[in-house]
Image 1 (spheres, one colour):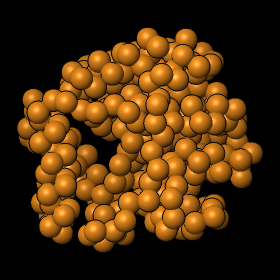
Image 2: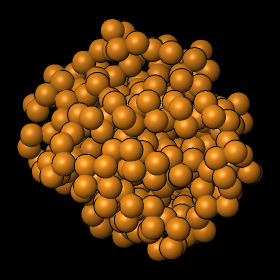
Image 3: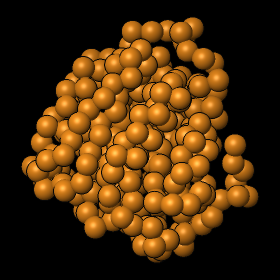
Image 4: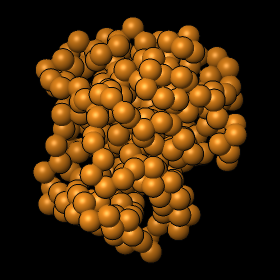
Length: 271
């Protein structure tokens, strides 16, 4: 897909942030999930760039973007990039962490957002309660705290099949791609490194003020409490709806790229 040499860099106040910018037309921003980078969207960028201007940033601390050395918010980084590119209002499409960035940004910088597609996420205030996800989160903390990168990666990749499938049920190319990106990102950091991220809060109570269309697109194999939170999100925004891709989990855009692309393009064309 895209080599690092093809990336562009936005000189933020705290280091350079990497991004791809390709295609032409109305802007669509693709926001990757945690620990990976713009390459997560290899199956989406060509399909969407045939009709739209596609911007795919590496979130701060991920991929080829600078780490944080001062307090920051994801939404502010994205707003700075969109203003730098004169690319708002844009449609924001995000998976997991990227979905949270999308909802954070429409809440904090509504003038820059035309619509939102959020996948595997609801808002930054959502907390997982199911035992399986809590176990994975605890394993992340334990392995990272011990500097056990192999153990952390094994826990990270358990999310690909999810609770009700095994690795044998998954195309091995998916964990290979995710693992390559995740190791690149994790090696940018050190154990005990200060977390400078400032979270956007009080999001649930502000959903009624979102004035743009919101699509919650999720795999049917996501934990029930995530699907419930996504349903709550689209109930509480004035123009929200939910769609489900059957038989896939958290990384729906990688498991069923054609169906994902078709659904997103239909949404974009409806705006």
